[in-house]
Length: 497
Image (cartoon, rainbow, N blue to C red; front, side, top):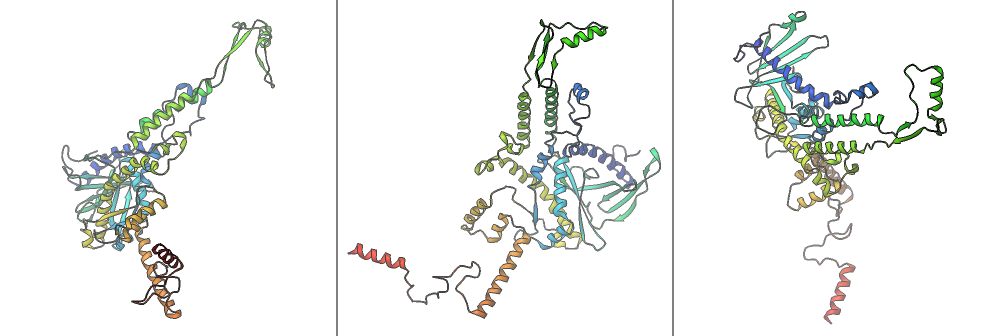
């Protein structure tokens, strides 16, 4: 099958489809290798001894000691998007939140992050529906791939989506900057090929497929969080398999008999009966007897399986160090989680790793939102290159500790809205707070008109001055003295005398 011009850039849509299909096939094989480990579908105990299969058979087929999902989920659970700020001086953008909610991205964005961390990449396709409303659809790297312009890490030359429908027909969509092409596989057996692509205009003028790449370097090829973990995971499975074999053959005392004659090659009935009389008999009450007075017996002590536990713990520690996941996530050191400052120090590496992923993923989400506004005709926001993602704080802290920190920030004149964002409230919740405060003040005003004003601050609910219900002193009028003031005055007079 032709995959485009030999040694040159594809020129026709069909050449692009064939070329990108080959690229997607290679990408899919890499992603599936990692997805089997994340989904715990990896081959069980791939390093197990042959004796393991002979003794246990299929008994442990469903058994896995798999830490790979933890490596990915510990980062993805800290990557939660709360909203978008399309201009630096503006609060969270309502239109961006509407696009976000309309495309179910509260949940879909989490799945896209997991796929990118697990396989190295996932993709966002941006297009318009029949009402010209923006659609942002996260896509799997098993079905979508992109091709960049030579020498560029940003400008995309083409993108391809491949999928199979419920009736087994293969479909493909090719995006080029000026057009969109669709095709399906036709023919029987090995003679199947792509039909002549059908063209549609691309009004956006760019390839509307945006990669979510898990990377920290300038190289274009992303990496999976499991790339360095899988060899250690396989070693853990191997040691666990050895421990199971040892538990079958060496974890119990091994008994030894001496002075008992072995049977001949073809024993007679009398010889067999004599052997039975000389053998050790384990009765229900566990009393062992020997009929031969010259026979001796002994035993080897049971094997100590703690060596396997120590080795697995060492491998898990290596895994924790490579992935920057705290030790207490793996239940090391007795599984006791640290507290206070110690947990902050223990999770510092994981928090820094999450913030780093926010940088790269955030750029992709910002581009997707700009393109979505372009679909809906809002050209000012389509060119809002100062836009930023509002991420939830990836650092876990107690509510009391966080509130105390925010009160100190309040003394530095940090605006209330910023403090509310720091506490973890979403832009929608903060907007509701403003409405609720306005409603409370309006209700208080109505009550004051009906029953008379109260000397209570409508925002804080605290008395303005003095005791509840007392009037504030008029200008020039002395403030009423309390009992404490009178006692202090008497003491001053005594000291003066």
